Image 1 (cartoon, one colour):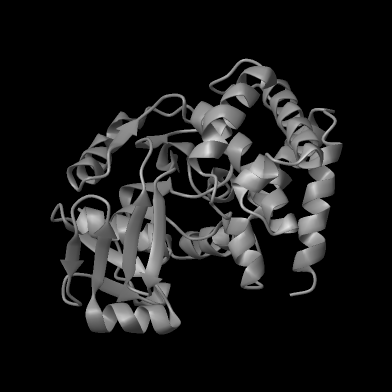
Image 2 (image 1 turned 90 degrees about the horizontal axis):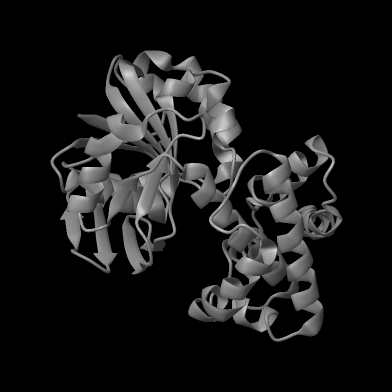
Length: 316
């Protein structure tokens, strides 16, 4: 089994090490200093669960698709930031010969609807999505640290394809120490993550505060309540569903458990802004706005938050 991991951040390196531990052949697409570091020192997975270390001889690094042999990969893991999907999907399409006949693409990213980039070029039977709420960080360019685990990684299809053909991947990730399961309801779980991320990520980044602080201010609570209500309206109008039937039901668990459990966390959007790099806002709040406008749903609060992030990004 040959697997290509595109995206050499914390999630990509963590999953690459996980699959390597199960004796699969793993290649990683990386560039610049990260590619150099992996070629010199290999990769490691540390933190929660079992630790793994693999030498430079255990993993192949590619920095150009033209260098990859034809008919090589059974699976492609997309672990990059969502801002790279336009480029990655085009490059994979231009280099389809590197993929085997029955290849599968699995998207391990934030946001909703990232499969749409790949469905422009590949059949829906080849494209799957994953919900990842395990916490990964990258203390060094070639090291992934698992910092938080709450629920299993879930893999499924937003196009309602049968995920059972990916059982081997779920089993390998589970055997590496990170529980992974298949689901026929990946949309419900991705929207659950969207509710959490879209409510907290951009607002915390704009105000430069952690998640907990957002729940201690009447003004931010009012904003978050409106964001949640708008997202629920979008979910229903778009024909999707999530794990809660009404916004009130979600708000109860949001304020009583979800935020307290991550009180001190600063969002990835906040981290990107601090580094002055483009955020994933288009895959998060941007997707809510897109679906809202398609279905004539009021998303005015989400629009304000989105525009503020874009205004900050415009200065980079």
